Image (cartoon, rainbow, N blue to C red; front, top):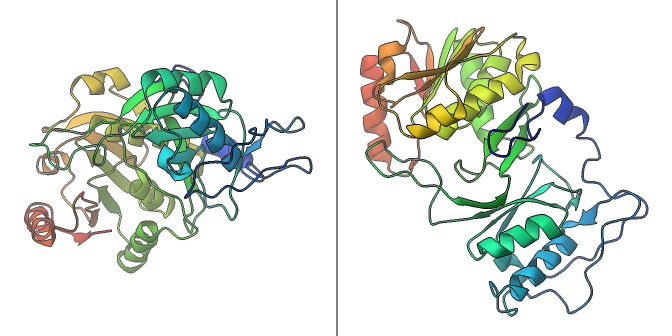
Amino acid sequence: MSCPVCGHDCVEDASTVLAKLPGRFDPCPDCMGLIYDKRSPPPDIDTAEPCPTCGRRFIDEVFAHIYRVMVDEGDLAGTEPLAALGTPLVNPGFAMRNPPYLSPGSLLLLSREVGERTARRLVSGVPEVRGVVRTADGTPGIRDTGLEPLEHTLLAGCDVRADVFPTRAGPIVVYKQQSVLHIEFPRDRNEKILSLERQISRQHPRTFVDACSGPGTLGLAASLAGVECVIYSDAWYAAAYWTAHNIQVNREALGIGEVKFYRSYNDLRRSPVAREPVPVASAEGSRVYQADLRCLPAVLPPEIDLTALDLFGKEDSSRVARIARAWQSRVGGGIFIP
């Protein structure tokens, strides 16, 4: 599938991603790598090159290489700890027992310190780096449609990557553009998915609304668990777009055919925050909208059995309770907060 960010083939069907997963970041017998203290600068020794046999390199060696480029460009003084570089995100992300040996194009760097020139050098000169994102304060997306959205800045390369999440019915593959969507770290146990599966086991819903869908993780898990009709919605353009794309990515596991898209990535980006519902895509048993949560009931079927309200800012319990009461009065059915 063509990537909307870089135009290359960054997005693959879930079955292709999963087939490549075993041993994806394991070392071959010829691999070697040093473990560095993340609380200190890397030692003043030559950084190891990628393995000549498999082309992989231990993540600490890659980070040391990145560190030296950032020092050379003046983004770091050379006294900062290795951990000061930022957040490394592998592609694809999945629960791993050991630190990874990275293949070319498998690492996305999120950093507050990195500059544009450095980012270009990293993408062109560090083979494992697929993209570099400069982070801002806060989480990408929107807390409320009345507030300004937040985006990080893609400086170089591509920031589209996949995460693999376990469900009782099998894994799902969730793509996202990381500069505009929040980070989800895959674990052996995903508490949100487990909570959803418990709700489905208790209530046996025929209709489910993933009302703040993000990239669609909970809705995909509901479909895989056998819910007949899943409606996804998010007011943020990137969430709505990648939700639709992720239905397409997982369509084999979901047992569906064609996914019909009504809006392109560029269409949605022109109006990044929606109030009134905008149809984005549909497939057998699935519909995706870009919509304000408060306006979504206008396009819902008359009987909704279960809704997940996975809101930003769940620590504000009075706000969450107010939104849940308003939803209950208009839509009804069961509600749970993942």
